[in-house]
Length: 609
Image (cartoon, rainbow, N blue to C red; front, side, top):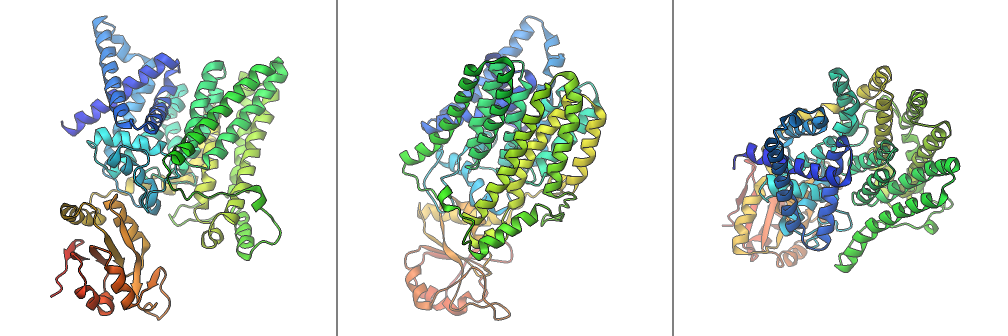
């Protein structure tokens, strides 16, 4: 089947699922694309716990396609062709348009970041290899992380890449998930093309680069912040339909916990904010029992989401390396020096204006952003109170509870750096811009929704003036990167050839330059076959200046002789001085093959004669 036809059929199947969701859940069509993809991943997650994810995937795909065909047939049969040009289908057409744009732009992208290779990217690969939500435990398989984002990538790869893993399709799946919410934000402005473009630009800048990641990097931090913000937005946008409000919020709360473990914190923040708002309504309407019941039901949803995954891992006896910390572990007295330094560095970082390693200039510090959040919230309220979106007694508790959650999250993050990160990562605040950015992405999506609700184009323009320059350096980053030639693919044909001789070869991998990312990337390419080895080895530590080399392991000749006996193959990268130190041992070994990475970016079998 030609690729374009395959993509079109897949889109039609998704649209069929969207119409099914609208039919049975009664969600407004602007919310349907986003909620459909979430319900799709939740359905795959639940089926994965029962070991039937492949069958359910085909059932959903075929069911969605057949229902779409049925709708088209019915409209033609009744000669109701106006249905296809109806303005009510605006959200579906927007989703379809962005779907194809994303396909053209991202389908050939490749992974570039450490964590994409070390675990985020491995999850869909596990699913495609084994049709199992966990698969065999491996040094590269972090089994403690939930799987919902990977399940969406799995679903897209299953049908768009014919069941084989594609980095580009995985990236396309994640970008499409973000884009599925765009019709909701455009709904009020569909008659004004300039405002549609402006909202689209703001939305793109927020989800792509608001201190988190570019959208083509499949880290889950931006996805978590995105879902958190949408959980608050859907709670308010469905304010006139009580059942719809709590069903949509419950769906989001379930999904948030299946993105990352820290999702529990954000889910509880949403519950706290909703609780405060419901109490205000209770004081007005004096209906405490129904309110407590709804809050309890949402708490049960959080409990089910968390313990379904934890229980499944325990049932499968899956090893996990997740961090843990209890209140009794936290003490601000008798801190170690690195803990004091990490604490001081964390609070200093909140007030810095800087350019980061990706050359993104942050004109405003994190403290500035909190202030701007409060300012835009107040400006939105000044307009919205006239439209009775907020009653007077609701605004301060709502914004106040969001503010409390942000401050509380920052304190929690500081504690985590001090007590759960290694000394190396804690002092350097490893990835803090991602972890902090998660929360800020959520609250600024909320502000965007409120500003759109005001229908005030000047307030929207003011927000754009703040957001777009803040993120412009990284906003165009996705469109400046595209690669169809991945040098790390060089290992795949060699290993595939080896697997014909040995289905589970034991491979020892050495990169003499000591760059750990090289091994991680090659290891990702050949998963589930494992690469072993300590990155770089030597009989002594040194570099060109006689200094110690990072990540280099000292192994004596005799130790290496014993080590190599347990392996079948040896792969070498940057083997400059390896032969001088260990060449004789290799010649005397019983290795079935030695492969050296050459200047032509290929692994060539070495001759030991």
